[in-house]
Image (cartoon, rainbow, N blue to C red; front, side):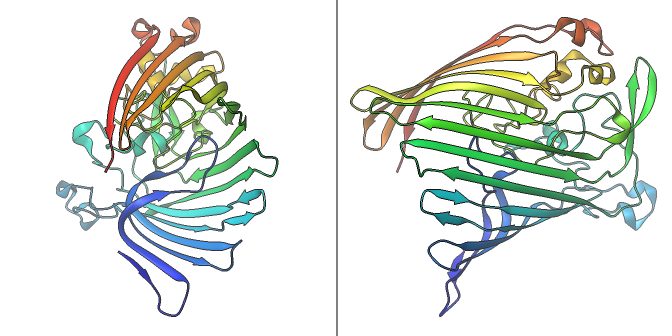
Length: 390
């Protein structure tokens, strides 16, 4: 429901709606999905506006456990997640910036039994891997109890774009996130258990610089995210997220049936990368091409591998996560070629080709708790899409 307060410029939107936190280069690193929400926005003048948000992405997921004989374990008890955000978009001549901050609370049962039937994931994202500390660590899914009813969460961002030097375009996005510890778990390292914290906090910076030409738009992009330091006792140093939708490339992710088979979300937490692209090249009417090459590296400590059940954990939980888990010894080289032909006004044909050269480090991943599980190979895709819009 969209409605306007009479005699004012205050606008409201209520109901299930798309919630995308402010971002520029590389898509939202925090949240881009549908959720039950209420947004209020007010335009002060042509340059400055303010938007307030309340969203509840999770509620009524906990099936309960009455065997404990306590009301604290009944169905839907403390299983809601609530988010409160403020965004201040500022548009000036040749410059745009939108500082924002979001505070959240998550009930201690908000992720217990959360869509467990399909691998603890959803069609939009997997909160167990983007909010909790580590992928594939032995014991991480057996998190102990906590006396806290709700855990605190916080995110902040500073995306800005400079267009004053057109045809030169510059976009920068800086983000920080924190999720409070809600219980501990036993991380197994070569058969020896160590108590790990479920706290997670970290930061991420992304940037894009491109120059518009008559025949296409060449550009360079890159990102850097903080990574795990190898100590499970102090939690994870990767930035947490709700449903991140990274879109620098079109194989690892971009919301278009990319890297993950469960969901289309992609986070850049714990990785760094740099890439070159030429987008929207056109040599024939209605036919465009985009070519990219990007190198992915990791910022996570190689010693984290020793806590993981198997080498497949590098895929952030056996294909149910939102990004590959890369250590400082690992790398991936991704190549994309996207061809788009507008056959009719509302009918497009797209051919996407992608290849990923795998440079995961053998010596590092042989140190997992199941060394025989390590296998690697390159990946490729060819994808034909017919898109009709109406």
